[in-house]
Length: 342
Ligand code: ASP
Image (tube, rainbow, N blue to C red; front, side, top):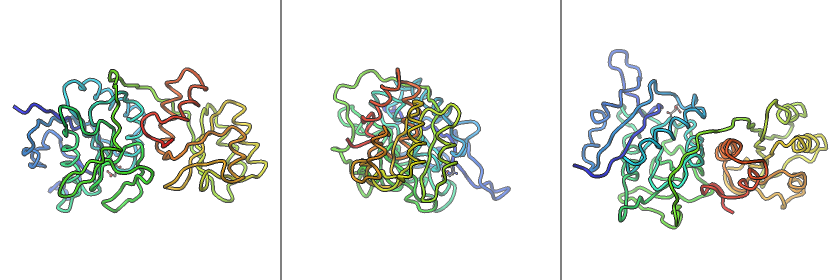
């Protein structure tokens, strides 16, 4: 009997589809039949169990209750399994990976998200390799310790820290990037782990989960010509508690008075404004240009090199799980789960 056990959780998405010979269209397959669809899984020397969402969901329909469901499944089965593989649509996978990284604490087991651009049931599928390698990583241990005790995305040939990823390609098999943090592993003939970049907690406390998220968060992407009514509308949304401001370059924004007034007014109403760059790589540095200094003088908080996906979910997590605004601000200036380099 295999002594290691891995749980696959199928949430939905392209990977779990097969061709229905009757209609010649793609339909989700029953994950109870996963061994039939991917017979290679029998060759692993560990036990694989699976659970499937019913009905499976396209990842565009993901919302925080689904994250709650996922962390609850992990919590309930944490002692039974050595690792978890979550199959998820690629569209919002980076958001889910980021959210889970904030909701799971003192993780000592891998939680690997993967999916595919082509369904498992098609000849050229990328799903098989993604699934098989994700499982191998989820089960990888040394001296009884998981090699990658983090929430990650495995895709094509790279393992990324989940909260550093962004989906950047809607067609290519290489769908994800992590430009501000190196891959945690690369798969070729060998699986090469990038140990210095993997997060090992020296003294991990008790595994714990947070289940609540606060969705009073908005995202405003700046562009030349953005008009006052758009900015004012977002800054004055009813119930809004935090705005992720996607700025230019190293955190720069217009210096028009109406713009600065709108941001200042939101801040005076205790709305947090987090500055995140629109660039896919690099960091916010509000001190570099006058167009950034204005924001920092107003009290806009730096997002450093955080991704937008991580910024949105970090705020949802912090707003729901902090004692007060000061604590939220403090945590935004800290790396909680390796999401920023500071
Ligand atoms: N629309 C699909 C989803 O994100 C695409 C995919 O599975 O990759 O669920």
